[in-house]
Length: 382
Ligand SMILES: C[S@@+](CC[C@H](N)C(=O)[O-])C[C@H]1O[C@@H](n2cnc3c(N)ncnc32)[C@H](O)[C@@H]1O
Image (cartoon, rainbow, N blue to C red; front, side):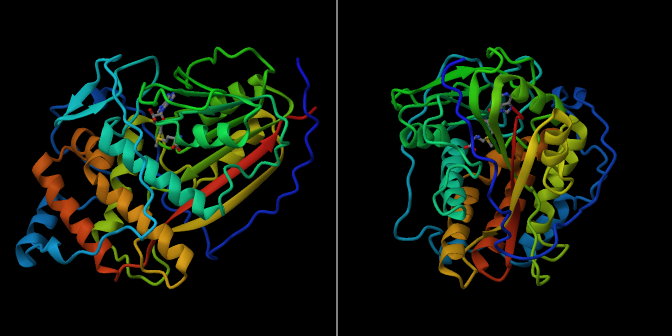
């Protein structure tokens, strides 16, 4: 193995930027039922998470006709725009209500669309996430001379591109099940199509750093996933996992139980139960537990409440929230369509009525909503 970096011991202190207890949420029994994914005809299957029916949103729309014209732009003056143009005919994607999804491949079941609007939304989220860490692309204490890094589930590759720019002497590989990455990338970065829930094809003990972000709802066995990372890392190498909660919450009760914001997470938790891929990764402390089980040491974590919408008085949180709102408004459908239609049986029209109410709540500034995110990193012992 070449020039194994002797990494400093993890010295970062876990930071909690906005205080408050992690919502333990409900911990429903997981009943894997991947057959439900293939049954696109399924209508209104029973839910276990208390999702309000589509008629609830239709009634609200009737009582309060929507007027989206008075909505503020969600972006600040320094609006980031990702112009990565994404074209691919490599795979025959699955299509649901006109939106494309990854083709069936290996074990993979991914719930968000892989087309342009959804990918642009993810790039906007990247900007908001990077603001939350004050520009840091990782929290694990990496040395500048690391040789090999891997980004699992790289998506549009936006994190991997930034990382490859910041570490020009590091060979970076981004993997995904969808070939949605741009071809114009830093010379030290390549992309590979690989299902991370299958045994990995990387040679053991070759990576100094493995990064995973926002794989929530895609992974049935996090310990198995982290064991693959453990195998692939050199002794002393770091694994970092950054995940988000699907719940929109508030500390002051403004996100009330009957709000569209409150309902949002329930689609995902319900869908995750049916897919056998939990969305309660943050709430249930899955990352830390799976890292411990895989053999990592010096595990540290960082918890953060990321605002949704520009309601915060703090300028940085306000900007972050506006980007999150912009990302959601960019493509509410592509994010929730699969869960609401395939998993819960809603029609596209029913979903549009719900989405309009969600937009309205985000734009009102009256709901002080946030979602939780958690980064956890650990070291493979020497
Ligand atoms: C929400 S996106 C996050 C993308 C990227 N990590 C980021 O933070 O910008 C999740 C990505 O994981 C990919 N994914 C889902 N299941 C996967 C699997 N089994 N193997 C590899 N990639 C997967 C999806 O195709 C999608 O691009």
